[in-house]
Length: 310
Picture 1: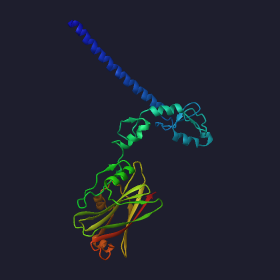
Picture 2: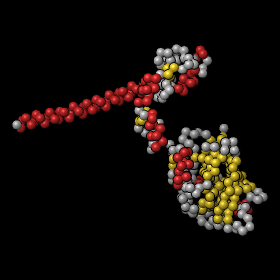
Picture 3: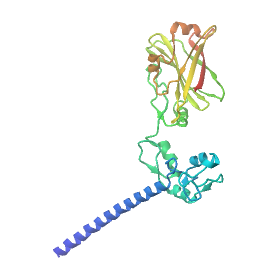
Picture 4: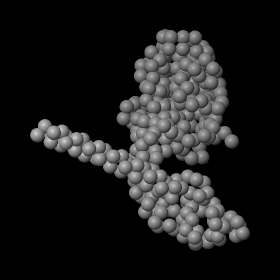
């Protein structure tokens, strides 16, 4: 009986081994199938993964939409399939089989450092919440008027940025500027008695035709006021922007213009590097537009300009 038990135990161990081997073979088969699909869904021109709509030449060689768009607008003699040199018609031919395969294929996350894969129907949702997504939108809203502490929130898109402002900083003034407008006026109203080493007097945001700008006015212990604009660029936006700040009083004005610093730049760094408009306290007090009976207030008229640098 003992010997029979030993054989039975050995048989059970062998069953577990066979299951493990079958599982490994199944995994290898799935990986091979995925690699085959990836090869089939790779554009023969740009070597990028194709997404529907996928096109083909008369011999079935596939091209992605962007490559097909480019080739069919070439002169007739150059309007050829890159693989077999067959002529490509302006009446583009879809490869519906490739479209179907693409719907079931697990595409890699577009963000560097992420190994997750999703179907096309779910990839956008994952990419928006992916921990590896670019986080170029920064809030930097002053949390405490007198301590120089700012909101540490970072987001992956400008849509997230505006949602964050609405939900967590509803008191921050937000101005929307229509396309074609090159200047906007911002009225700054605060208490006139800053006396601390650092004191944030005003913070605001501007939606300038889809570009997010963050503005700050602060007083430092060097007896100076500082005015800064920073731009929260969307991921992948490589444009350069120029911003200007003009402080206007009843009889004079002071202007400053420079390439807009990124939203990640701290206001203290802008102050130290001279990347903001800095004015002595005595000069700013002369520009104060507070009227009679408003001696306790600090009022400034800012004219802000913004444009894309070629």
